[in-house]
Length: 111
Image 1 (cartoon, one colour):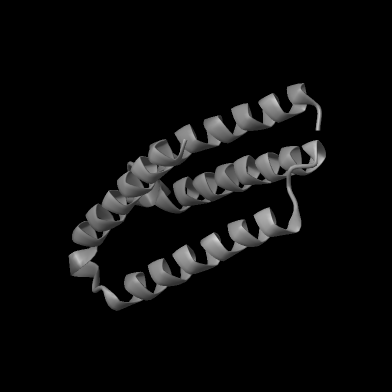
Image 2 (cartoon, one colour):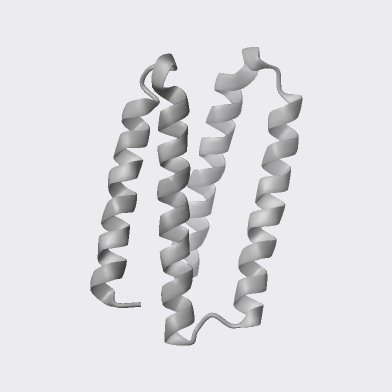
């Protein structure tokens, strides 16, 4: 993929993330905000995978690890989210944010 096209796609993704945060500020626009966030993340992940594939660094093992990580994390998150009542949602969001922080620490330690 051309570097300029990738940069433009990342820019579009960033704008969609900003629109997602704006949309999540109100219950009336929360569905649109969620949709913008999902589209932005899909673009960012897709461009990253496409770039890795174009460079020849995306082999079957790497793709398998990515898919396994998404499946395990998504599965655990879905199970937990379905079991928690809506009245405990702020605590669940705080717990998920702590996991994001832990992931950032692990990425930094691995770098």
